[in-house]
Amino acid sequence: MTIRYRLTVAAVAAAILSGASAAAAQVPSARIDAAVDRVMPEVVAWRRDLHQHPELGFAETRTAGVVADHLRALGLEVRTGVGKTGVVGVLRGARPGRTVALRADMDALPVREATGLAFASTATGTYMGETVPVAHACGHDAHVAMLMGAAEVLAGMKDQISGTVVFIFQPAEEGAPPGEPLGGAALMIAEGALKDPAPEAVFGLHVVPGVPGTIFYRPQGFMAASDRVDIVLHGKQTHGAWPWKGVDVIAAAANVVQTVNTLTARTIDPTTTPTVFTIATMDAGVRYNIIPDEARLSGTLRTFDVAQRDALVARAEAAVDHVAEAYGATADFAVRQNAALVFNDPGLSAWLAPVLEEAAGAGKVNPATPPTTVAEDFSYFQRVVPGVFYHLGGSPDGVDPATAAPNHSPQFDVNEKVLPLGVKAHVFSALRFLERGEN
Image (cartoon, rainbow, N blue to C red; front, side, top):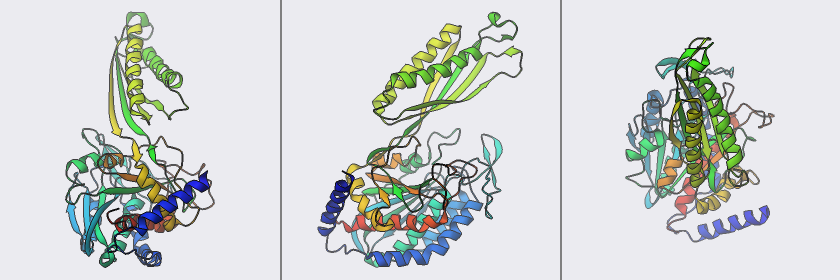
């Protein structure tokens, strides 16, 4: 079945390309490969510089400056401050045609790096009012460097491009900082990142643990929708020796955690779509012998089906209220979406497989990988424009991806040998899309 599927995808793509407009002549693969090779020393240098100077969401001022200066030097139209620190670059080809967008995220995380790299971060930033260590523990430094490299390659081919390429460098992918109503993608969209010109398709990538040089994704639901859940239990403070004289929110909180776990395990069919509901924080009390009057819990909900998600949220809220009532407490239950479902357009997903294989090589692309419960706000771009988001394997040489340090780990690092493929994937996806003409 897999072999027949791949042949069908290739045949469809060949038919599309053979019918493309004569004005959109195909750029030879060899020319793309040579151009990528020439830019790689810069890409590696950018990645290491950005890695050493990470910045938290909506504070990526230095990063945005590096990006904007580079795009201007290439002769692109550049808009800065789109979504606070976001940058949009526009490359108009020598001839009119379609418009395609490529996206990279720029923000780092409040993580203390433990990679031992010569260019490891020692930077700090402010998060929730506190000074914290900051590191590119999710690979966004590589994402920015690869898209900067792709911009340079494509700008050098301007004379052969029919159409327009929009480069989106996005802040705050890791979520809106406390007090901010929107994350980076949603805010950039609200401030016109997908307008003037308006792309007809958008592509993006993310480095993750995986065999170096491989690309994997799936059509339709690929990365989970992510909701933040906050629960506040209100009770009555009392001495720890006299729990019956108060309302015990500690006992209620423990029951809430078990109830949430049971709801997920016993009311969701695991054979349909993955669902994860995790209570990750509990904050209550200041002294060992005082039962406090308030307990705060927070967690994350990851889903792939909107109706299923809505039903689980409703059941969870009702269950938490019932648990609180049983102890004589009350509960506040709030849900906030951090990222929508990453939904890869089925048609574009099928078309893209042989294009990515042209970049990666035969047998290096899996367009039918299982879904992942990790989330990505690239999903908001896909709500406006058909798009595909794919993963680039970047584990260290000789390390089993299953045991490699995961994204968000202090030990996470990107195998720099995969950087050329990331640049190629961007360039091939943009060029081949534009070369389709109006088909």
